[in-house]
Amino acid sequence: MAVNTYIVDKDGNQIDASTATVPANRDFRGAWVLNGSVISEDLTKAKEIFRDKIREVRKPLLEAKDVELMKALETGSSTTDIASAKDALRDAPAAAAIDAAADIAALKAAWDTDVLGDSPYA
Image 1 (cartoon, rainbow, N blue to C red):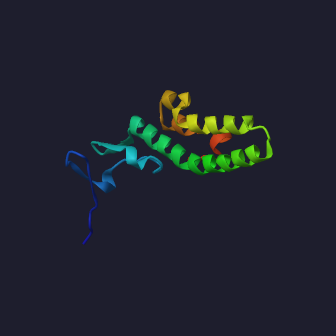
Image 2 (cartoon, rainbow, N blue to C red; image 1 turned 90 degrees about the vertical axis):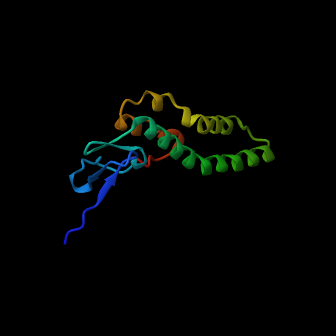
Image 3 (cartoon, rainbow, N blue to C red; image 1 turned 60 degrees about the vertical axis):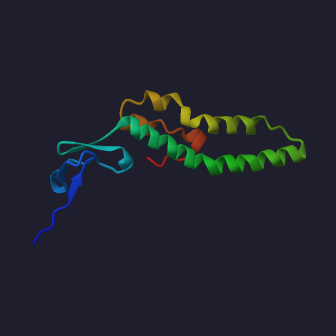
């Protein structure tokens, strides 16, 4: 006997999962919305998830910059570049490219590898 798996939306509507059209990847699964038998990504919610990922990735980067800053202060070295890097990390979730993204591909392309390193969405 075959067992069916069902997808239930926030309103309690359910469909057979085998009949659903699902996005190609699960990067923004928390932003999925069900419309009939089609699952799509809510771009506004995906942008929130994207910003949360930036915050997660930048935390250890900021901590490393704090160590660099303390070492520079101890030796009397310039802290200008370190301060600029920290500012860029702090500003990363507010990047204009995130707000300007019109679709999921553009959102993924908004990852600033110069500031944050390799993209988790590559």
